[in-house]
Length: 138
Image (cartoon, rainbow, N blue to C red; front, side, top):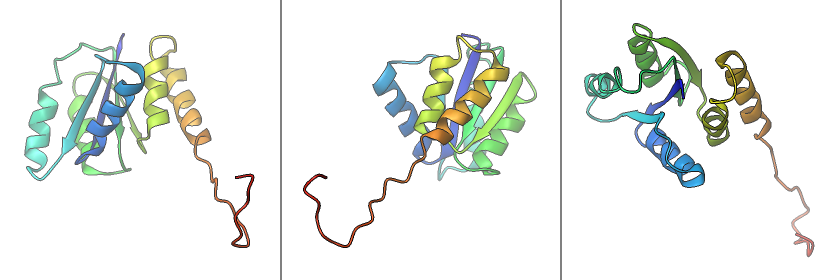
């Protein structure tokens, strides 16, 4: 695998996402999770520094929880100094699954737009509108 995927978030989301993904598809050595917690941004940077030389990847894909958030912005600026970096925002399980499962068969130029499209397609509204009566068919 030439692409390294780093999930970054505020407390809990990145590690939970990694755990959920690996529950579904098994251990993924190219997938990392780093979280900003109550220890602050300097500790977050120290955690990132441990990954700087880990898994010499051709590309680093950073997936963050929210646009312009501290975890994503900090990780992007940190890794932009040493490798080809791509920053995606709006972390969700379909996005991360698609990135992980397709990264060995698609070039980065196709991988990222395809993963984003696949993730967008999974957002659906399944709300049922009724007059308050229960349906036997449901």
